[in-house]
Image 1 (tube, chains in turn cyan, orange):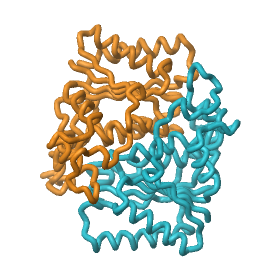
Image 2 (cartoon, chains in turn yellow, purple):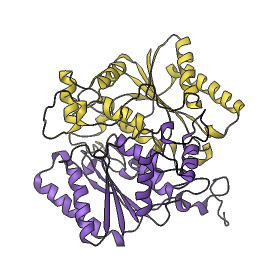
Image 3 (cartoon, chains in turn purple, green):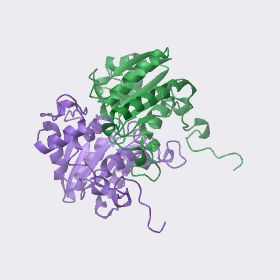
Image 4 (tube, chains in turn blue, red):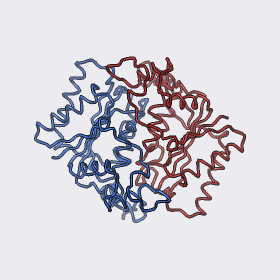
Length: 237
Length: 237
């Protein structure tokens, strides 16, 4: 497989960066081709603005998704965006590697999604979820956080991890048609011992070695919704 | 009340910006003091890095939250962050005004939260949720999106709006102790007629005029969790 890792940690010595490095090594050794977009090293600009369009469809009023669509078609998106879209086109699998900031991705990664997941290619019209533009590709999130595992769950203080990550797993990745694999979550990272960190890295290696056999998470199927995206009423209801 | 509106739309003519302007007018007429952080106009930097700390606690290895805590205590956070913290300190109520990008906030606003909600003041140790640093202040999200209302709900194609907004409402605002009011959601914005937009603006005015009587949403209470943040077992269980 061609695998793109998008990495979003500001500290090169962080455990989050060690997970990225572990993925590069493990996946390369398994025979995959791996590329990395290290957003901090690239000084990635995460702010979606009208400046992202070298040729404006409407120079007087910017609707970002509309300009994305026209810009993608005409090849006039900003160069940094075009380069990232090419990497996603190249890959069979996308791994988002980031620390949880406020129950979600750091802004630098959120802005990679905002700017790169262009209307007209990643989604558009009725092309989303299982009809999304990235059908056939897989995606996964690898995250680090300070909280402990018992703090996440139906009755836990922070609620369920899968709803916490829903905007990313469902709202961005599944929405664009990626088959989304279960996330790898490293808990309590700032507080664990060296030995526990080694154990997490081993668990991650095992997780990565099992990618081929992993079942994607379940998300909405367009076939369950009608033309206006209302849920279809079952025939026997 | 002192009210801070944080506005995050790239297009000054957008309907999202009209909602911000509507809030400024309506709340000022009601006798409140209103300030606006217009993030695009301010050219706000949303990327949290070691450069945010004029004096490093550990110059060799950056743990962002730890440096935030030290930087807040010593008054050495980057000036743009300090100015925003002062505005939040000043306000009795915070309104986040933004378009939904990928089920969540645009990166420029996510990075306002990442950099401004400093450990040591907004939260820290066991000071979160109803013990959070912003106790006594209220907050609300005002959002615009392209989807229609029937696309959000328990069986709807995109699922429930409140879980969609959970990282912001619960993970950021409630976590820091804000009493979070129900969000104002403007659906289908790019596609509605001028008359429908006028109706939404009227509804928003009514919503804003009712702020004083509005019940906050319910979030975890620290009293329901023990020292290790496990759920307490009820006495009669």
